[in-house]
Image 1 (cartoon, rainbow, N blue to C red):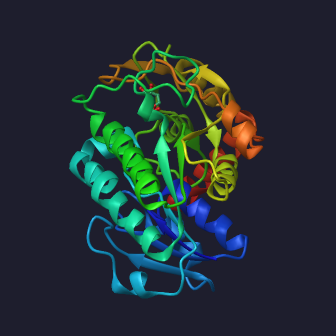
Image 2 (cartoon, helix red, strand yellow; image 1 turned 135 degrees about the horizontal axis):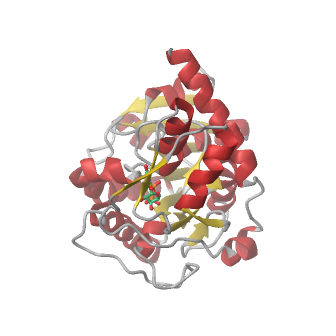
Length: 317
Ligand code: UDP
């Protein structure tokens, strides 16, 4: 089937493109490189079945896409996603969740294609319910620094449901929890690349606040498997995808130090405003409707990821 992927040069979407091609689909990837990197797609250049179109999806879509051969699915994955990135680009983030989502939904509707939105655990904000279940409506500060991302994704979810209810588009919504792996940007500010980079350079590991806040990290191949299953499912309401193994950021820093054999010290930096205190997905629904749960342990996933960053640093020397 022919599949359109927005945000194709992003971390998770680039892995999704690999998976779709490996399954025999043809893929047209869209990206404007605001935060995605051409490097993430370099290995697909010239690959039969893959086409890349540099395009900002908040703008009218190229004719070629509207007229082209039948599209079977639209995966709308475009958005700045790391806190550093979306706080640097708050208006673009709101635009891609609103105007961008609308254009991608229209594309799916015009082709009678299915539509998958990659939403986020940030829809739960700083959650008062733990672990987070899909039926929890969240605790989002609508005017805080993270609101550009949280509300953009919440709006995108609402628009997706409206297209399903009004136009019968076959939609799916994934709420993605913290995901890591090769092709994360070393400087995107997220805790996984930040700590690995610091540990490998022998620089201090920067723990924000007292490090007691929790996160649950999912390896990218598990995430892609969950997304692939979801796009073929008839589940229209949001489904959490993530790894439920929860840890504090301080424990995570210790784990990175142990894994890399680093002697980096741990230093404290101020906790960013509205930083969620706890996050852990309840994945009972994904297990029930998709038969999916993560397989890769944190230790295995981090070893792969550290290996990737070591290679990057070796090449750049
Ligand atoms: N964090 C940290 N040091 C860093 C980067 C992040 O302690 O150098 C913390 C951050 O405050 C948050 C957690 O790690 O509590 C995860 O942050 P990340 O930016 O990876 O993603 P988030 O889950 O907040 O979207």
